[in-house]
Length: 363
Image (cartoon, rainbow, N blue to C red; front, top):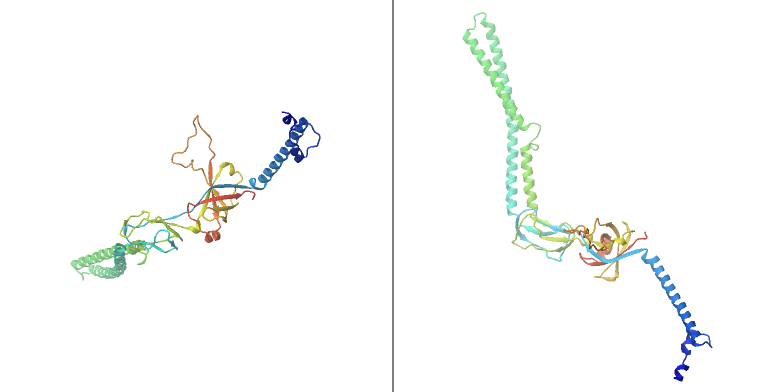
């Protein structure tokens, strides 16, 4: 017990380490130690506050980040525009394709027959309209002939009517001349009506501008268009995905055959908390990293736009918060980020990949 009472607190080696003055009693040493510890604690707290403030000023107040970001793209859905039997599918999933490259070929036999029939109809229409013009010319000549006949009949009737008063012409001859005059007038009237009928078929148009020819030409163009649609080509450069078509399969208009993902046009949808979007503006620079390439590859982009609503707002069954047990949940809005095409060419991304996005909101 005498050894325990002789032991001082804190031990003298600790006092020396802390720089405690010599000759202090135990109570004085404890008091001095508490003061020194409070000073050290205050210094640590102040240093932590300075570090936190510096971090907030340099990083937190300038950047907003999220790891809830994914690569997306406006994929091209490949669908047929005509019904038919698939003859060949020269591409497979994961295959790179160029714009205009053949993806699917549909059996063109039916469309080729339709084109041949439309060409025949077009030729017939041209010949028929040419006949209209010939008939109009013939009707015009007939009108001229009937007008000449009428003029002769008029002269003959006038001569006979003039001689009738002298008795040189009998009444029967005068009647015959009058009948001939009436017949010539009726013949001219009929010829003029025939001319009007023929001219109505060609009025205001040439052979090529005639409605019948134009309708036949439109049918021919439609048949040729349907024939061209038997070959389905890639609308953009990209990667083939979701190839669901097989040779021999009968497809219908609108059936999805495959998709083409334009890797050079992908973008990122970064879902930020609503509290992070206060200072986000279109055009601000964004840095991104992907799990595919790691932190060693940094992508650069720009804010292209902010979504018009949260995912829950556009859900099939939107959330109804007018309840007594409502709990507030922080919502997220998608921010579209346009990527640098040169960086995409060097390090291609795929739709659906995870990304980490950081927006510099100081600009």
